[in-house]
Image 1 (cartoon, rainbow, N blue to C red):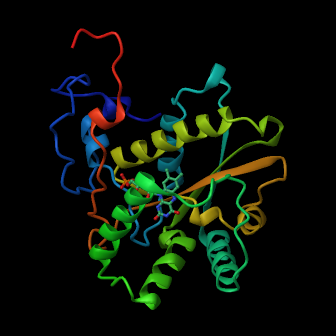
Image 2: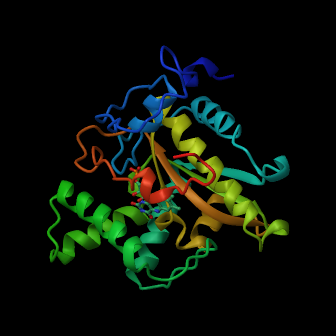
Length: 256
Ligand SMILES: Cc1cc2nc3c(=O)[nH]c(=O)nc-3n(C[C@H](O)[C@H](O)[C@H](O)COP(=O)(O)O)c2cc1C
């Protein structure tokens, strides 16, 4: 079993407020305290080709599954894909994307973002494109970037998160899967692994289902690319911004 001490705050209480703390500079080594993990983690979109040991992935999943879930139902399942099957998924995703096959993901969206949400979407895209040297009007490079996403950023591992179709239709199972996905990327980071949760990788769900051998009784929720971060990849140091606590939280019943 994992060294649980890795996630225990050392020297600094887990209750230390993070307000005023800047996200840490990118470091891709193992992080030890909760704050180190949360402030240091970022989405990784460039990976070393090195394989990730199965035992390490098992440990990360075991840690992630400490996530809370409604009535402790733990609705999540994981299909951990690497090697030739993952390459077949990349090829199928790319082929269908280039052929203009519409998205068929089971993870339901809500159409285009507008207003503040759209502004935030543009902000992170600008940050990533600036880091990658992709000019606004460079259609070729923009397309390459999209295809890179469909290839799950050439990561050596893709963790596909699913849940039983028998509990499909409500919001609770997707909520629980979100909790486990967040825990998983943090557990991976604490062990020197990078991840990016990505819906691009499951936009062509039938391709993923076929090559990962996912039965029809599973709803494909999301996938998470995983591997050792390539420290020379320009987009990896990008730190996404967050709105302030004042913008996000309403305190009710407090004196001030
Ligand atoms: C449900 C979900 C889907 C996402 N899909 C993609 C994706 O398809 N491509 C991508 O590059 N990043 C994707 N991301 C990563 C987000 O862009 C990223 O988490 C966000 O910009 C915050 O940056 P950070 O993870 O570095 O803190 C996704 C994240 C989530 C939670």
